[in-house]
Length: 477
Image (cartoon, rainbow, N blue to C red; front, side, top):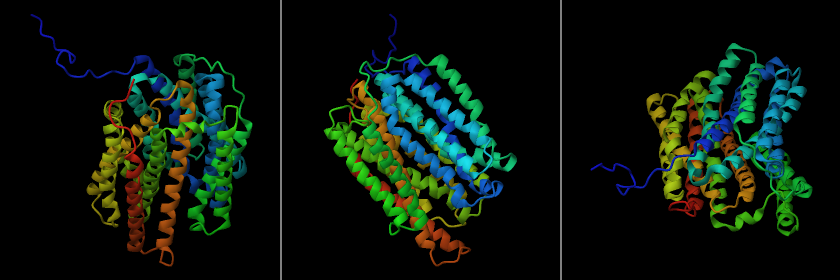
């Protein structure tokens, strides 16, 4: 008699594998996303060099980053309409081509103004690319949604960790122009892979015109909110017109879009009726707070190593690698676990681990043991996957194929605003803590960062509230 060793015969649930065709498309799309996500972090470490080489000031060169983020904000809402109108493959290839053109132009920039202008082109490409990537994969994922989302998260998680290292190596050994030159071969390969490897998809049969009224309300609203939030740390709070004016205008335009989108008879740029779902609303609220937790710490950690411990940019990037290792350790199985047990328990446990692993930095000084901090970073990295992947999975539960693009836009908006707000608040906390103290007082600087890490822990505690509303149990097919 032949012994049956199958999992099904043994009464154990079989682990469903990702469809090889879906896995192939996922890897192709993720490869294309590497360039814009690494580019963002590499440019961040090059600000000082750009200021010197282009003979400008930090306030002007800062627009190399700010302008890029703002044009991303304008482009993101358009991506959903474009996918439904032209098909995901065409839109993805178009966004890569725009980013490639922007990268070539940035590498050839001759002054601050030209570099800022060409970064706007890059921002358009990146703004369309990321939500399009999510939409295409979610629409084809089937029962393996969690594992597919975990693949999408690879560049998002690794970019902030490896980007500063690559940027430091390029700045130390080559010209700043190579930060943009390195995008060219990556993007060309990604274009070839996408053209050959992504199957053509049919656009929606309903050829909806672009909602221009919605675009003129939502894109400026998103852009003004991001800009206003970015000014909070610069002006030390909310008591400056440079902060309050864009924030108020952004909120007014956002409110106007909400009223318009709920009353219009045509298909709005973003379908707000998705928020009638408790799960979808809880997922976006959790993504917003998770963005605060993750991006806030991504600001604090490198600054702690540089300003408190006196490390170089390159060595700081190396010291942050343990967090990336932690992310890689849990990435592959978090997604599958989300498919099997839902997102609520995973997110709650991940929040608890994030709090525990952030505590060492809330007490860290200039001489704190590096091994102890590296262990905390590994643990923190392992938990970060559990904050983002399961929440993104739950956001798509029960949606029709034609609703996925709108869901991707909403998630991207909430994650971006949450991340910007978290970073701005923590930067303001540090600024207030250091106000009136000598810049050379290392213990005072360490104390300021301790306080900011406590704020980051507070963000994580608040995140438990929407996390309790996330779904539990096996996801329906």
